[in-house]
Image (cartoon, rainbow, N blue to C red):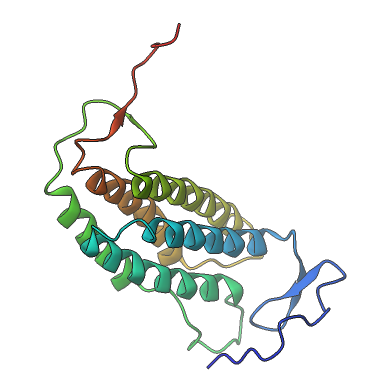
Length: 191
Protein backbone atom coordinates (compact mmCIF):
# COMPACT_ATOMS: atom_id res chain seq x y z
CA UNK A 1 0.00 0.00 0.00
CA UNK A 2 1.19 3.49 -0.81
CA UNK A 3 1.02 6.13 1.91
CA UNK A 4 1.79 9.72 0.99
CA UNK A 5 1.60 11.97 4.00
CA UNK A 6 4.30 14.36 2.86
CA UNK A 7 4.38 15.58 -0.72
CA UNK A 8 7.70 17.39 -0.82
CA UNK A 9 10.84 15.77 0.53
CA UNK A 10 13.54 18.03 -0.94
CA UNK A 11 15.53 14.90 -1.84
CA UNK A 12 15.17 15.72 -5.54
CA UNK A 13 16.59 19.20 -5.21
CA UNK A 14 19.93 17.89 -6.44
CA UNK A 15 18.40 16.73 -9.73
CA UNK A 16 18.00 13.10 -8.73
CA UNK A 17 15.03 10.91 -7.92
CA UNK A 18 14.63 7.50 -6.33
CA UNK A 19 13.59 4.42 -8.24
CA UNK A 20 11.28 1.98 -6.50
CA UNK A 21 14.36 0.00 -5.55
CA UNK A 22 15.74 3.00 -3.63
CA UNK A 23 18.52 3.60 -6.16
CA UNK A 24 18.90 7.29 -7.02
CA UNK A 25 19.16 8.39 -10.64
CA UNK A 26 19.33 11.71 -12.42
CA UNK A 27 15.91 13.04 -13.36
CA UNK A 28 17.15 13.08 -16.96
CA UNK A 29 17.92 9.34 -16.86
CA UNK A 30 16.33 7.37 -19.70
CA UNK A 31 14.41 5.13 -17.30
CA UNK A 32 12.94 8.19 -15.58
CA UNK A 33 12.09 9.65 -18.99
CA UNK A 34 10.31 6.42 -19.94
CA UNK A 35 8.06 6.20 -16.91
CA UNK A 36 7.55 9.96 -16.85
CA UNK A 37 6.24 9.71 -20.40
CA UNK A 38 3.96 6.85 -19.36
CA UNK A 39 2.60 9.22 -16.70
CA UNK A 40 2.13 11.90 -19.36
CA UNK A 41 0.17 9.38 -21.47
CA UNK A 42 -2.02 8.68 -18.46
CA UNK A 43 -2.72 12.40 -17.98
CA UNK A 44 -3.74 12.80 -21.63
CA UNK A 45 -6.12 9.86 -21.28
CA UNK A 46 -7.55 11.49 -18.16
CA UNK A 47 -8.32 14.60 -20.19
CA UNK A 48 -9.90 12.50 -22.95
CA UNK A 49 -12.11 10.78 -20.37
CA UNK A 50 -13.60 14.15 -19.40
CA UNK A 51 -15.14 14.17 -22.89
CA UNK A 52 -16.32 10.53 -22.99
CA UNK A 53 -19.65 10.99 -21.20
CA UNK A 54 -21.54 9.78 -24.30
CA UNK A 55 -19.16 6.86 -24.86
CA UNK A 56 -19.35 4.83 -21.63
CA UNK A 57 -17.87 1.67 -23.18
CA UNK A 58 -14.74 3.58 -24.20
CA UNK A 59 -14.59 5.32 -20.83
CA UNK A 60 -14.59 1.95 -19.05
CA UNK A 61 -11.73 0.78 -21.26
CA UNK A 62 -9.75 3.97 -20.62
CA UNK A 63 -10.33 3.65 -16.88
CA UNK A 64 -8.70 0.21 -16.96
CA UNK A 65 -5.89 1.56 -19.14
CA UNK A 66 -5.17 4.34 -16.65
CA UNK A 67 -4.77 1.76 -13.90
CA UNK A 68 -2.55 -0.37 -16.15
CA UNK A 69 -0.36 2.65 -16.83
CA UNK A 70 0.36 2.91 -13.10
CA UNK A 71 1.34 -0.78 -13.21
CA UNK A 72 3.60 0.04 -16.15
CA UNK A 73 5.16 2.98 -14.33
CA UNK A 74 5.84 0.69 -11.35
CA UNK A 75 7.35 -1.87 -13.72
CA UNK A 76 9.76 0.72 -15.15
CA UNK A 77 10.47 2.25 -11.71
CA UNK A 78 11.90 -1.00 -10.32
CA UNK A 79 14.46 -2.42 -12.73
CA UNK A 80 14.98 -6.15 -12.79
CA UNK A 81 18.36 -6.89 -11.25
CA UNK A 82 20.22 -10.01 -10.21
CA UNK A 83 19.01 -11.22 -6.86
CA UNK A 84 16.04 -8.82 -6.76
CA UNK A 85 12.74 -10.24 -5.57
CA UNK A 86 10.70 -11.54 -8.52
CA UNK A 87 7.33 -10.57 -7.00
CA UNK A 88 7.62 -6.93 -8.10
CA UNK A 89 4.69 -5.53 -10.03
CA UNK A 90 5.20 -6.19 -13.74
CA UNK A 91 2.96 -5.76 -16.77
CA UNK A 92 1.88 -9.23 -17.89
CA UNK A 93 0.93 -10.69 -21.25
CA UNK A 94 -2.75 -10.91 -20.22
CA UNK A 95 -2.87 -7.10 -20.11
CA UNK A 96 -1.54 -6.96 -23.68
CA UNK A 97 -4.08 -9.57 -24.81
CA UNK A 98 -6.92 -7.60 -23.22
CA UNK A 99 -5.90 -4.54 -25.26
CA UNK A 100 -5.97 -6.64 -28.43
CA UNK A 101 -9.49 -7.85 -27.59
CA UNK A 102 -10.66 -4.28 -26.97
CA UNK A 103 -9.08 -3.08 -30.23
CA UNK A 104 -10.92 -5.81 -32.13
CA UNK A 105 -14.22 -5.00 -30.40
CA UNK A 106 -14.05 -1.27 -31.20
CA UNK A 107 -12.63 -1.76 -34.68
CA UNK A 108 -15.44 -4.17 -35.68
CA UNK A 109 -17.85 -1.23 -36.14
CA UNK A 110 -15.41 0.92 -38.15
CA UNK A 111 -15.11 1.07 -41.92
CA UNK A 112 -11.62 0.30 -43.25
CA UNK A 113 -9.43 3.36 -43.68
CA UNK A 114 -8.70 4.53 -47.21
CA UNK A 115 -6.66 7.56 -46.11
CA UNK A 116 -4.53 8.62 -43.20
CA UNK A 117 -6.48 10.68 -40.69
CA UNK A 118 -5.59 13.88 -38.91
CA UNK A 119 -6.02 14.18 -35.14
CA UNK A 120 -9.32 15.95 -34.63
CA UNK A 121 -13.05 15.61 -34.88
CA UNK A 122 -14.64 15.25 -31.46
CA UNK A 123 -12.70 16.69 -28.49
CA UNK A 124 -12.45 13.19 -27.00
CA UNK A 125 -10.94 11.89 -30.26
CA UNK A 126 -8.40 14.72 -30.40
CA UNK A 127 -7.29 13.99 -26.83
CA UNK A 128 -7.12 10.24 -27.51
CA UNK A 129 -4.87 11.03 -30.49
CA UNK A 130 -2.73 13.19 -28.22
CA UNK A 131 -2.49 10.28 -25.80
CA UNK A 132 -1.54 8.02 -28.73
CA UNK A 133 1.36 10.25 -29.76
CA UNK A 134 2.64 10.51 -26.19
CA UNK A 135 2.31 6.73 -25.84
CA UNK A 136 4.42 6.28 -28.98
CA UNK A 137 7.10 8.47 -27.41
CA UNK A 138 6.99 6.33 -24.25
CA UNK A 139 7.38 3.25 -26.44
CA UNK A 140 10.38 4.75 -28.26
CA UNK A 141 12.02 5.58 -24.92
CA UNK A 142 11.32 2.09 -23.56
CA UNK A 143 12.84 0.50 -26.67
CA UNK A 144 15.88 2.78 -26.41
CA UNK A 145 16.22 1.86 -22.72
CA UNK A 146 16.01 -1.85 -23.60
CA UNK A 147 18.98 -1.42 -25.99
CA UNK A 148 21.23 -0.50 -23.05
CA UNK A 149 23.04 -3.67 -21.96
CA UNK A 150 23.01 -2.57 -18.31
CA UNK A 151 19.21 -2.09 -18.25
CA UNK A 152 16.52 -4.75 -18.26
CA UNK A 153 13.09 -3.89 -19.63
CA UNK A 154 10.11 -6.19 -19.41
CA UNK A 155 9.26 -7.16 -23.03
CA UNK A 156 5.55 -7.25 -22.14
CA UNK A 157 5.80 -3.58 -21.14
CA UNK A 158 7.01 -2.64 -24.61
CA UNK A 159 4.28 -4.77 -26.23
CA UNK A 160 1.72 -3.09 -23.95
CA UNK A 161 2.76 0.38 -25.14
CA UNK A 162 2.66 -0.74 -28.77
CA UNK A 163 -0.88 -2.13 -28.41
CA UNK A 164 -2.03 0.84 -26.34
CA UNK A 165 -1.13 3.29 -29.10
CA UNK A 166 -3.18 1.13 -31.50
CA UNK A 167 -6.08 1.07 -29.05
CA UNK A 168 -5.98 4.85 -28.66
CA UNK A 169 -6.05 5.24 -32.45
CA UNK A 170 -9.05 2.91 -32.83
CA UNK A 171 -10.83 4.47 -29.83
CA UNK A 172 -10.37 7.94 -31.36
CA UNK A 173 -11.98 6.75 -34.59
CA UNK A 174 -14.74 5.03 -32.62
CA UNK A 175 -15.70 8.18 -30.70
CA UNK A 176 -15.55 10.17 -33.94
CA UNK A 177 -18.96 8.85 -34.91
CA UNK A 178 -17.57 5.37 -35.59
CA UNK A 179 -15.14 6.99 -38.03
CA UNK A 180 -17.74 9.14 -39.81
CA UNK A 181 -16.27 12.35 -38.35
CA UNK A 182 -12.62 11.42 -38.88
CA UNK A 183 -10.63 14.26 -40.44
CA UNK A 184 -9.01 12.83 -43.55
CA UNK A 185 -5.56 13.81 -44.77
CA UNK A 186 -5.59 15.27 -48.27
CA UNK A 187 -2.05 14.88 -49.65
CA UNK A 188 -0.71 18.11 -51.15
CA UNK A 189 -3.96 19.98 -50.46
CA UNK A 190 -2.22 23.28 -49.75
CA UNK A 191 0.41 23.40 -52.47
